[in-house]
Length: 481
Image (tube, rainbow, N blue to C red):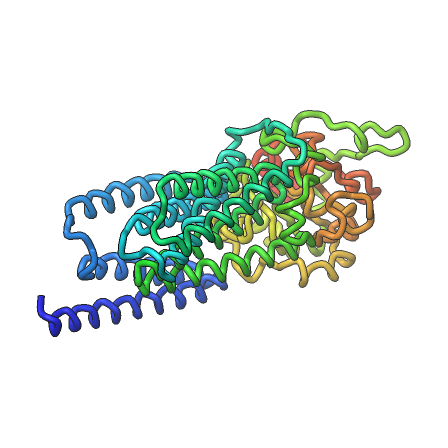
């Protein structure tokens, strides 16, 4: 190919990459609003499709098109099948799995690039090493997060001085990264040890993180995987990978900071504190089946958590002027969102003003509750965030809490000794009446009891969320006008 033809082809490729990058950014901006989120996903998808297709024209791409096409078909088919079958409540697991894929892909690119003679001893080699380090950590860390959220890992062995060991491994990996970045060629043994240590670091970072902090660590790995792809984009001199990786990395880090702020926990505290898991050892089964009786607040002689039956709960809700519904992970587990919206419409026909209060990390991932409610058809204007609703709870007649625990626990506000102290919560306990739908006397993901359950204005309605809401619907219909 002549230099003129090659330059013309590269101009077309780079222009297409520019439009793909613009679609990524427009899509990300649209995703900041629930109203435009679907449109943003489509835009970003079009950008990714354009970047993929135009890569076939890149002069540096290996001409083994059959292998490339087969890989695209296999990967695309598997992701499509998984995406169409995954439950909305399992989205955190899916995000963790895709983070692992992105990080693993970046690590594999680094391995290939670091074995190229032309990359030796220059800046591109250093960028490839950094991308490989971040990608490897994101790969194993995200896989472990996926298995923990899925419930495949319920018991984690305890290690003394785990954080010291982890810090030592990371420092050694960084030292090897420095040697690899400026050496005249990557020694195979050195390269192997570097990647093994990086992979181990991902496991050790995730190991002590409990379920309540898992959204933050998943978001952090998302940022790391994005940055890894961006660094490998620089090594490959691929503008689309550069822009996409940097955008994902920056947005992922911002999301990590926002979630940590929403929990009033510094990111460093989540990563390097044993209190998140080892001092409050919990299992996935605690979250899935909260029928196991818990001690402490439930067994105190001086106070008692009061229950309510469905008939009385329905009457309280039907004759209220204003009701606020607080959905939690229990709603997601029970698939109760459709019934909840049906119940809301029934109350509104009676003249009850109903809105939904959402905590930033309800459901273990930001926006999880919003997605579930949107799936059920709840209008966006009925969904209110924590900053707007907290000042109004004192004027609310009844709050209906559906499977939420930690995000309504007053201990985060009042008990300086509590492990969740300082985490912003929905001030549900300040309402006139609170009805909490719970499967049993279990604890939340933090592993601590909710003192709100002992409040004089709180009543517990025991049972599966979907079945209880269906019962409430029947009871309200029987009340009539």
